Length: 183
Image: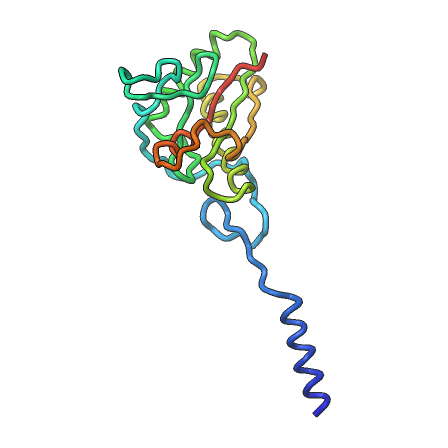
C-alpha cells in the first residue's frame, strides 16, 4: 500500500514539475517545435496585392491627395506589407524602382532599411517579421543593381509606429519598411 502511494505521488510530482511546454509557431505558420524564431532572414512565400495608392508623402498629407502617407525620408517611398506578410506585393514594385533611382542619385551614401510591424504578435515575432521585411526590400534593391554593402537592415518590430489609433488604416500604415540615407 505504501509503495502504491509512493508511486502515485512520484508520478504526480513528475507531471507537475515537467508541465506542458508551449512552442512558438514559425512565421510561416508551421510549428518548428522550438521556443524561438528560426532564421529571421529567410525570405519565401506568396505575394499579395496591396493598394499602394493609399500611401504617398507625409509632407503633402491633406484632403487634396486623400491622406496619403510616407514615413521614409530623403526622397524614398515606404514599402507596405499585408498583415503577417514579408513578401513585396506587385503593387509595391514601382516604389522599389523609385527608391533605386533615389539611391543612384545619392552617390556613395549608405542606406538604412528599417522593418516595422503593427502591434499584433509578440515582441520576438514582430522583431523577426520586421527583419524579414527589411531583408525582402534589401534583396529587391540588390536585384536591381544596388550594392549589398551599401545597405544595412534593422528591425524596429512594433516599437516605431507612425500611427497609434486602433483602426485598420492605422495598422496598415505601421506594416512597412522605411528607407533613409545614413549620414
